Image (tube, rainbow, N blue to C red; front, side, top):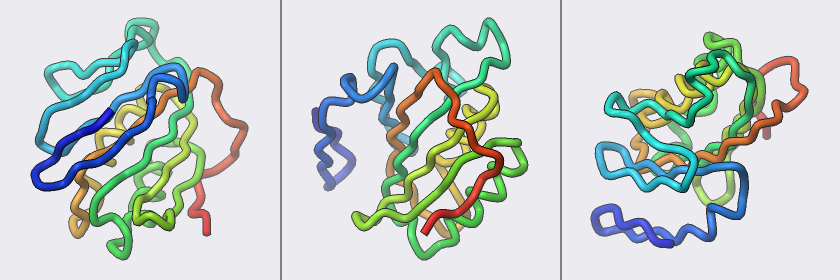
Length: 145
């Protein structure tokens, strides 16, 4: 599957095979959803667990754009700590930032919303989020090498 963003073309491989549900979202642009997950009119993730309230979950997010060298990891840790989320954030060699997070589903959704813009110096092009139903066993949120 390909996602077109302006003059840039990004190749995304078989998201549906990677986890329970996934979504690709472009900042200020159209959203491409994979079955089981959708965006509501307020730009918040919805998938049926909202009606049950505070269920625990886990996500992996890959943030694309100008996201390294702009304090993205540090500010993500501050936001995760504020939300009471555990996990890790790390720079990847391809220029992206990867976030693995566990916690209350609604708090994770707030983190995803924040990841779409990040700190003021960042230019987020899109965020690829994969949701999992089993939370990871971590005690804090940390910045990984």
